[in-house]
Image 1 (cartoon, helix red, strand yellow):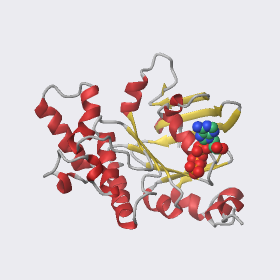
Image 2 (cartoon, helix red, strand yellow; image 1 turned 180 degrees about the vertical axis):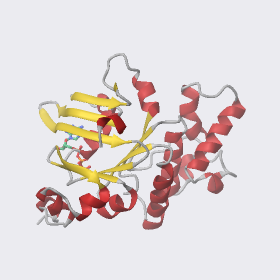
Image 3 (cartoon, protein in one colour; image 1 turned 30 degrees about the vertical axis):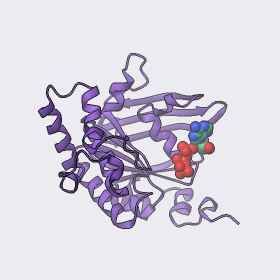
Image 4 (cartoon, helix red, strand yellow; image 1 turned 135 degrees about the horizontal axis):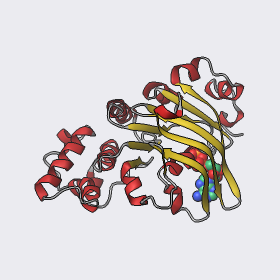
Length: 261
Ligand SMILES: Nc1ncnc2c1ncn2[C@@H]1O[C@H](COP(=O)(O)OP(=O)(O)OP(=O)(O)O)[C@@H](O)[C@H]1O
């Protein structure tokens, strides 16, 4: 895939935490309206890479990003770019569901309100309902929108966080192990939702589960020790990886995958 077709293109991305380099020269093209899975052993830099895309690393003292990350051809590290706006365009969902200590309604209304997306209470309510519907949660919560977000089950809370992320009409959704804290049924619901969402969003998901990567993604990028080893269509990465390190990881032969002594 050429950079022209990509929603996000990274070139020579290095990330440092103080003196420690966590990513080395990552070049990756992420296509629009597909799910790209980032896989690799613990500590290989998957989350670091994800956070570099919407500049969440800016919030970590001592973190530094070099190289280029282009969103529709525009460098997200351009000093004139408004970071708050960037994070509305590139939403994020974390491993642990983290609803605000507010009502279900307010969790979703927060972003559209601070971005001035609604002119009236009715318009705001419309955005909230639409986002909850898209996140596959509306039917379960429509009679208790004033209940605290934290009163929902873990899987519902994660769908609430997805509704919150999509309420600002982002173009990209970054998901850092979004189902790892959930039971298998809630996980299946989230995976189905991810599949539906890709029609409207570009999705990048970090996962430790290769089964999940195979189920939800169209493309997979394998990282090892801070380097992107290879990327390509998910079916090819899992059936005919080009690199030995990828093959070792997906077949469970890599030392990093074995349990400790
Ligand atoms: N805030 C931080 N300060 C210092 N070093 C960090 C920080 N966050 C991550 N690192 C280091 O950067 C490297 C990459 O970490 P990262 O969390 O991106 O890996 P990962 O592949 O997402 O791991 P995991 O699968 O365990 O979540 C690791 O060596 C980690 O210790």
